[in-house]
Image (tube, rainbow, N blue to C red):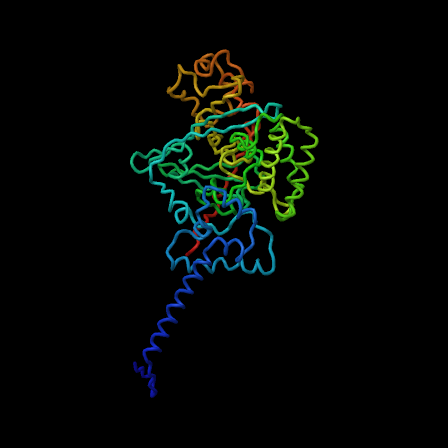
Length: 466
């Protein structure tokens, strides 16, 4: 082959052409391999920037273990778009070189439509689901309590327009502002109704002035504003203990099993460092607790089983650095350990009419059905005679939860049981131990409405180009 370059002629033989083609193939293969590696979890979590090592382990144990980092942090986009997005993450390289504080949340997540919705199609039909939460007490027998919930996750926005319950937030536009990257605090919320009317709610107890709230950028609510821990969840280790007891990894025949486990969990702040440093500390704590327990000879096998399980739990729940723990990473789904849903549905967010954002239990799930061991204190979700009947209209009032304790009358006993009792002992709706007799973080049904002020709408946070 002859190639004319100006006055010179380049002659390539068969070997030269073959070598050129091989070079192009090798260069292309190397580029593809390099691109694939730059999108791998190993590169993202270790080579590119050093996030919390615990997040890597948590990801492998979560329900999204087969979803790669880039699928959330860069989205499922075309290759060309991903190539354009890649340089926006270059700031992590500087942090890797000079060092930086470990992040508590990601600032690089792509919009839900590019990540979550590529698998969880919002237009698909969804059904309500059932969740059963099993809890064990700290008494000698580690007595069991089961709470059954019907979660209102059903929706079919395309065919029927049905979007009630938890996924109502998908079909309806909700904007909010938050001063922190983890969005633990939400002082202002705006809801756009189907007719286009906008209603705003302000937290009566917020420390921010109207002017400060107006200066904060408002963002449209996305999937991961609630499902923020699906990528690498940090579960309350006491909840993990319950799961270990339920599955038999910890045997309840061992006296005070739950109480002893919780006592060890309370020692977690003392356990820091890399795994090879944490493991001996954990072994020492477990050995000390086992010695104090003075377990009978016939229970020794159960004691060894308990020790093995607690070693797993404590090693997984402890962190490299003392400034971090599972509490550093709130899970906004639910409202047990952190406010979660109660960041907005908390009895403190009022509109101009003095109405709060509704927080009726039955908005997102049915009334909890509690079954306690030996039947003591068990609560049915509905009395059989009333199963399937609709709630009275008065239950739908925005401020119902604030006033329902004062609205009690004889007619309530038809559904809630007679005689109507309040408290936590169980036996009827109003003494449901899943609702009463416990504290919910962020909830305040006694907050006073804020003084009327003219609040300018916060600035809209526009999606970034690219």
